[in-house]
Length: 143
Image 1 (cartoon, one colour):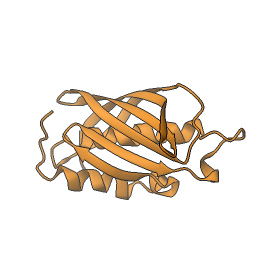
Image 2 (cartoon, one colour):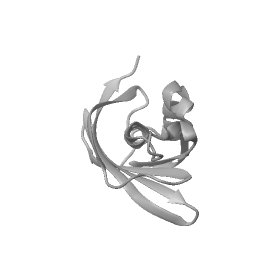
Image 3 (cartoon, helix red, strand yellow):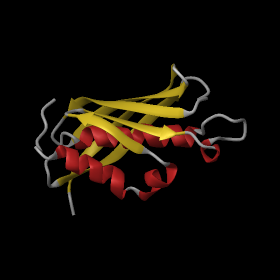
Image 4 (cartoon, helix red, strand yellow):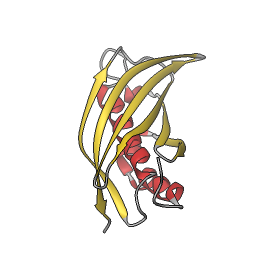
């Protein structure tokens, strides 16, 4: 993948810093490169659903936002990214102290990008794939 913005790191950091909802969740940007992005979230009681598993909404949010970060690494400086569609498969109950997500752009078009996110839950040294999402994202002219 080829980035169109030599300062893409700053642009993606802004995607994470300006999104108040993901900030409230505790989502953190951990690493990125052209066409990919990683994030993590320390699991707290507020992230759990009634049976003690990480809520599907939390998993969907980390998958979606990290896909946006991956797409953001490839956009021009004057563009923003918005999700237009995504699908998530919850593969097993998410149990652990940490969620880690890695998103990769599969297709970079002029106006649409397709990315895949994998969400892992870890406890200690054991990590399991708990969710996989595919997102279609639009590259739009910024404000």
